[in-house]
Image (tube, rainbow, N blue to C red; front, side, top):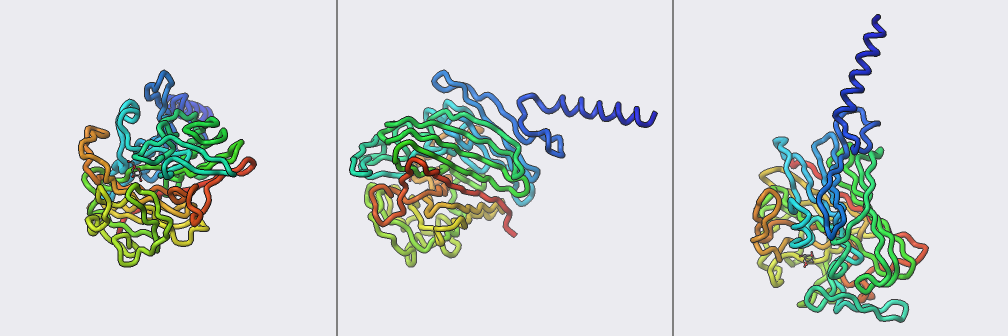
Length: 382
Ligand code: GLA
């Protein structure tokens, strides 16, 4: 009698669980809680191709949304010091706005992030000419970089946490680059900490430059400018640039400059002294101990208590404070984004590395695998 009661109860429980976990939910089965860790939604079409958004969650309040268009991180929700969950990345509500408008909000940038001088480089004695899409230079992979491609996606609940891998084949000659490249980017929301891990891989059939990054615009308060966010950068030096934002080739100490964030400073405190046009930070910092995976930057926001720490395998990172934002962009939930309304921490090899002998090379050859790993770790200030 008793065992019958248990059998019926167990069946009812299974039935109830089956009812709340839709068929498209991936990976929930071996999770102890019935909460959905991974869901997928249709998100319209781009050029007749369907676009999807994957939602990854953990048990500590982190939710990340990733679109197959541009392998874009569209939302990232984390708690503040009173436990209120908020979205800390800029973006749009619809994929159409990303297509029309986006200054690389949340995007996976490739085949080469940042600038290549005059869109030219020589590799193994052959000169290549790339698309020029930023004044006189090539920027972020060209006119139709990987941020504007539709990727395929596969979600899995892994021991580390809920995860989605997006894949792209970039054909030989795309935007002027040699070689067919097979690339993947895997986003994982860690099970046990509010960490978003991003891992990249790429292989090629001809030698080609590869330098991938994520271009999320963070605002730990959600909106407004980021002047009172406090930054600490693990960089004793940076790469000064010319008037077109191409590195001069020097690796200069940050000491005595507004680029010295070895001790904590509000982002806005010395922004007028940066000297750029428009003013603001848009510079590659040379990470201390660049040979090993480790700390790049820590940014905290005093009112919400949110803290973002970035660790990476990359030797550099572009610290960009949204200087080109015009203050008119209407983003998610109708919020108008302020000029310098976000900061980006774009982990990468140095800009224009293909033309700069003093910088670590970014050439990938057949038989090799490019790998990059970056973690955005969220915590709360004491
Ligand atoms: C990068 C560049 C900036 C700007 C943004 C996109 O961060 O370094 O100069 O082009 O992308 O607006």
